[in-house]
Image 1 (tube, rainbow, N blue to C red):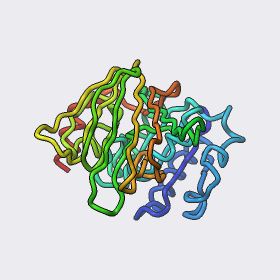
Image 2 (image 1 turned 45 degrees about the vertical axis):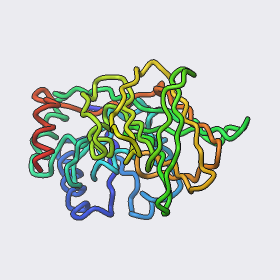
Image 3 (image 1 turned 30 degrees about the horizontal axis):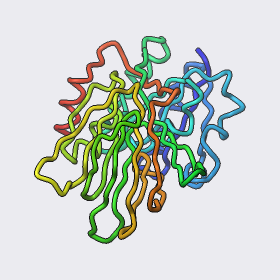
Length: 283
């Protein structure tokens, strides 16, 4: 069995107890764990989690994340280029991304030791922010890219293009472009559809549109999108996975494509997305 990386979110209640249980479980079976973010300060530092584990990269076969969906999103973005399966132990609320609940932990960790597990590849978004001829940055997202208004209640205008063909002008509080994985998050709250996460597509959902209709649009994952921002009279923000935030300027362009990298989330033989969905939504 290859080495295992362990990434805890120390801010979560009971995280130390769970980390100790995981450590003891694998130590009793002769497995080697390498813990990144050994403190809450480490987890929230500017040093990427991938750098904290970089010396072990070639020897690592699995990354275990102790936390909620937000923790897994952070790890997925930081370590997307590693191509190593991620297993989440849920300390959050519903935990759509975390496969294991704490009460079942030892049973599923035994499957890890016996190598009785697989993984599901999840599509990611790559978003490029352009300001005139200058590229301001490129950002990876497992859940969603959101354009939204600032603190004042003013309408945001977003023009959307698919493969440079004009699609729609959205007026309202903003626009969500989600992956299938992110379809159970903010997009769902805004009225978007739930999509099987094994698919490759974009779900485009307006936020409180100033319109007589409120409908999402499904865009082929092989296509590219361009979002043009009109922010002359309102503060507009770009948010990545609900965690990374930037102020946008008038006429900024956001280019959205399917990322080359995919996230591998560990799953077990009895995994069913639809059964899991039913259980999570009832939680």
